[in-house]
Image 1 (cartoon, rainbow, N blue to C red):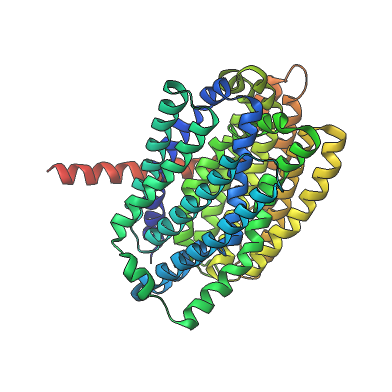
Image 2 (image 1 turned 120 degrees about the vertical axis):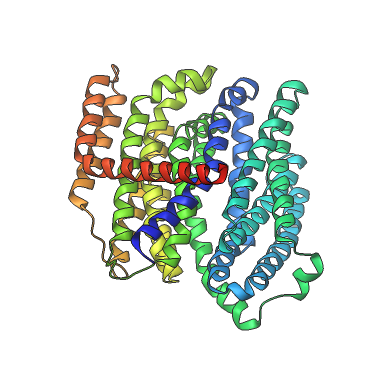
Length: 481
């Protein structure tokens, strides 16, 4: 495939995922004032722990089979439905096991939780896992438009129910949890309708034993990666609950909302990139597709991160109500963490392409151990801000380890010295922001320096965006004529 076609395929998929993800994330982002007005810090901390725990259980009780469904369905187009069937079987078995475990925990009173917490924990686990498997299958068979539609459905249902249940019926924490589960469930129904696979075929039309073993061999090491990635993203919340209280965790959870803007761009791009990385992998990167894409992506993230750090406090005034306003102190540090989390995932796509999930997992697990140690030490000395620092440092470690090991599989052609200077400037900008005056002049100067450092890449991004817009206009004109 020519370079132009590679970029065209990547751009098309990025655009489609942007339709489903960007609007939805922005709408949810602007609902933060609703949550911080209606829910208490303790309630918000509780729903966040339920969601965080559900994501952890997904890695264990589904064997991360959704990743295998994507990888093997792309490779085995003729047997893709059989691959999906095996993925759904794994989910059903895992769900039964989890239901039994949660029932035992509830009746033995191991955790001081109300019954509804266990119910919604299971429901969120099941519908989120199912949606992930189904959407990965649709991506693998090039039904990217349908994946985009399912993302829109999740958002619309969740937002409508949020407004209805929180404002009109005042169901509080229960209303919030119902809306989250219902949104994913509606998307699952849509995906099943698109796929048109009957329950009978799910159990009859399954891949052979050799394929099942290959799928498990690929996905099981990713359990450790998933758990470790979860630790890097979420372990700080448990440490904060333990050492500072559930209310403080509510504030930390809200602090993640501003970094959501940055992670939205990653979510959009990574879904499209994972398809291109598998299809277009070239060890020598002879046409520079991987290196150029990484450079442009890194440029966009750095500039956006710097801009969001400057606007962090003004945004916090708008979004974070009452005692939640203190969350601004952690948001900029978590922005830095999100930057390296996003870059780590892009570099990690190399290991997905060569089916080496072990290095993928080891890099994340190493950083997770570092994260765990730093959380215990830094929270003890600095409080909640120590948790944010631990998260940021752990993601820097993931990125560095993956970048080093990925050189075994691909020849990167990137300006690493320039990138390190840029990361140092971002860290300095965060220091400026935490000064009493916030030193906005110094922050603005850093943003200008970063723009100058990456001016050529920024021009390339603008040219690429212009080409995409012109192509879309051309297609629209052709369809109208």
